[in-house]
Every structure is written in structure tokens, then in C-alpha cells.
Amino acid sequence: MPSAVIVDAVRTPIAAGKPGGAYAGIHPVDLHAHVLTALVERTGIDPAAVEDVISGAVGQVGEQSGNTARWAALAAGFPESVPAVTVDRQCGSSQQALHFAAQGVIAGAYDVAIASGVESMSRIPIGSQSQGRDFIGGKVAARYADGLVPQGVSAELIADRWGLSRARLDEFAAESHHRAARAWRDGLFDSQVTYVNELRTDETIRPATGPEVLAGLRPAFRHPHWEERHPHLDWKVTAGNSSPVNDGAAAILVTSDEAAARLGLTPRARVHAFAVTGDDPLLMLTGIIPATRKVLARGGLTVDDIDAFEVNEAFSSVVLAWQQETGANLDKVNINGGAIAIGHPLGGSGARLTTTLLNVLEQTGGRYGLQVMCEAGGLANATIIERI
Image (cartoon, rainbow, N blue to C red; front, side, top):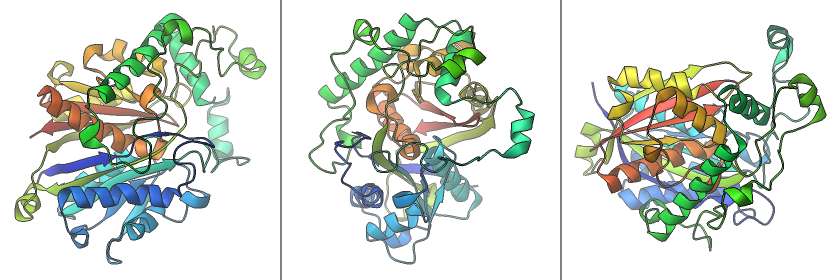
């Protein structure tokens, strides 16, 4: 059975996903195409050898609709014979794209594939695809008769259940900014980034922030309706201890080990194990806990065998609850900062985490890296890569 190996991975700097953000004037197809072009240039692979481009995008409406991956591949100059498909597993969409690419290689369906993702939240605001629509239907509503809640309220419920204080949430968020700022300062992101325009760093990093600054922010999701339904909550989740809205893209070249040798490519990592799981859609963001356990069991490893973790920082409470349950060493988690600072361009975040994790393993000499992503609806993807 062939192994799926990662030859290279690249991302854009992550921009603020709002009017005036560095990429607000760039069509998401063109932003996505930029990382595809960069991946080809970095590896020297003939685009005609790519057997599929599997890409994540969450806001599949407007400029990100119509199988946006196909148009990005064409915009990147790939031959018309190269197919492409867009997947949606919410925030884990491009991590799922990596899973699909690796599964295709292991099954012998592909020799060469690209897993990628994009999100332009400045042009396709979060929730655009579902605004004004009932997307769960009557039977799901009946099954969860007490009602589901927005992600921010889920983050509040998690903070309450795991006994996480406002001070702890803000402390974690500040550390994310400090780590990311330090990584840029020390050149640790240089080898993984392809520049799109004048933006030369992740736009939402705040190097000068601290817990005392974050403590001044008001709870972002407190509302009379949710207060009435959840009167026990202290309301401590703010914009400062949550991920921002962002624009960005990332891409990963995945091949079989045999194809890499035949094409003269040097693999950087092997996809060791992957898993996906479902969990309570009310808490919604806790699926990363069983997903981590599942991927470790599948890979024959323990949490102590992992040298670096990338846990998507949708909210501070999510990562801290995960740490309590898994016992992971926080010194190994998001070593170069996480999404609270770097940003969370939804459909591009899974591939961004892989890109960062690959570089962290190389920078630290680690062998195994685990990334895990919480997703709307109570889902989660987990992936273990092994540095070669």
C-alpha cells in the first residue's frame, strides 16, 4: 500500500477579512490561484501531473460558488485536463481536503494531488450562504428541541463546563499574539509564506496586546435571548479571546512515495493517520477531544509521542478545554501562535495549520505533529503527520 507524503505546503499571509483588509480587493479565485501557482513554482512539478485539486471553502456563495476550486486551478494556469472539487466540512474543509487527497493516494486512485483551501471573508462575510435560510429542517429542530446556539454561545458553554475563567481565556489569547509576533520577528514563517501584495505579515497579530488590554473588552455574544436560555453563564468570551474574520489561502502537494521518487521530488512529511468524528452540536466545538483520541489510537501513538500540536484557536475556551481533557503540554501547542492572532480564514485554515505544523516540526526537530480542527455542527478533523 503506498504512503501519502507531503512534498511541500505554502500559505499566504493572513489578512483581516473586512473592508480595507489587505486582500479585500482580490477575488477569492485569484487569491486561491496564487497559492496553487506558488506550490508549482516551489516544487517544479508539471501541473499536468496533478490528478485532482481538492479544495476547501465554507462560504460557497457568490464569488466563492460554482465549484470555486475549478476556477482557481484554471486561474493558476493549470491545464484544462486537471480536475478540481470544492468540499465543505465547515472550518475543517481544507483539512478534509488533505484527508481526501491522502486517502486517494493510499487507495491508488491518485499519484499526485493538491489539497488546498481559501476563504475571503471580506468579500463573502461569514454566514452568507445561510442567511435567511432554515438549513437544519424540522426533524433536526425536533431532535434538539431545546434549540441549538451560535458558536460564540457554544464557546461560552464550554468555558462554563470546564471552569475556565475570563482571565485564563485572555491570558491564552495574549500568548497567541506574542508567539505569532515572535515567530515573524525570528523569520520562522518566512519559508512557508508566498506574498500576494504589500502585506508582509499576518494582519491581525497584535504584538503589544496583553491580558490587561483584553480584559477591557466586552463579552461579544451576550444577548437577552441567550441570557434567558442560559442564565448560569458568566459571559466571558470576547472578540479578543476569539479568532477574527480573515482572508487567506493555503495549498499542499500530496503524492505517493513512489511518485515522489519518480518525479524527483523530496517529501517533507508522511501522512501518518487521520480521523474525523461527530460530537454534541450544542457544545459544537468539543469534537476535537474525541477526534484527538481517535487519531492517536489509529496511529498507534499517545499524546506524549506528539512533538507539536496545531489546535485551531476558534476560541480560547476550545483549546483550553481540549488541553484539560487530553493532558497535552501547552508548550507544544501552537508554538508559533494560533488563529486568535494569525487568523482563521475558514476554508483555508486546515491547510494553513498543516503548513505551519510541517515547518514547526522541521524547526524543532520533532517527529510527529498532530493538528485538530473544531467545526460547526459538532464535527472535528484530526491529522497526524510524521516528519521525514
